[in-house]
Image 1 (tube, rainbow, N blue to C red):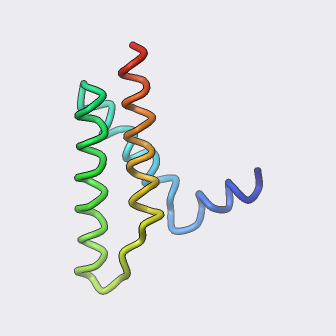
Image 2: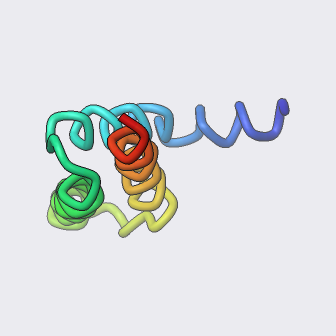
Length: 77
């Protein structure tokens, strides 16, 4: 469990996870939640690349996973 928490603290991945969840909840549909989380994650990573940082697939996946949690929530509501 400590490894998972330290993984989320690294590079503020918990913010990506929560941000993806919020974007997914605002999408009002399970499929739109996944799509919008992927688009927002791609835009954030593009911003990082344009500012001279590397593309971080784990940050991207954390945001899409947050959107996936929101999509699951929309499927069950």
